[in-house]
Amino acid sequence: MAGDRRLPGGCRALGAVLLLALAAATAPSEIPVPGGTQEGGRVQVWITDRREAITDFTALPVTIAAVALHPAGRPRREGWLRLLAPAQAVDLVQATREPVLLLEAPAPPGTYDAVRLEMDRGRGTLTTGEEVAVTVPSRGTATLSFRIQPGQTTVLTLDLVVHDMTDRPGKRYEVAVRKATVTR
Image (cartoon, rainbow, N blue to C red; front, side):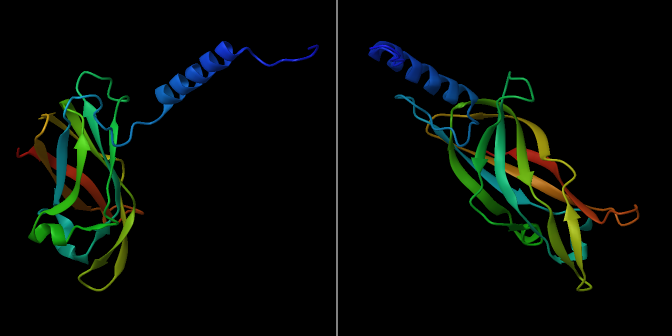
């Protein structure tokens, strides 16, 4: 047929395979699920806050969208595996009384060298009743070596800190990751 630009069946199939491979290579990795017969591990992330300016607040909800784990041996700007946090917000004042479970999720076995919280801005209520803006100057990243084993749960505890920045122009309070530990 003159002007028929359709590709033969084999070429269409090859084109489809190439498009799927390109999509898989460029897609962000969120909540990786171990494949094949290899049993995956699990990770729990707990939040605490026991220091600095948190005593200025009666409530300080912080929205945490995700926790990202960084595989060891990869460049720091690449390879982060995002685990979406199911909680809407974590009240850091509550985290001073007892640790708050942020998430428990499947994760591929392996060695990791950092953990990062993706936090949003928030508003806190001071002990005076005043509401103030709370900022997160950058993603809360902590260097931490840990291993996720097949069939086991790895427990990470992230101690957040609230800094009083009221003595600086235009700033109020900031939240950051102070310390990260592996307990199992």
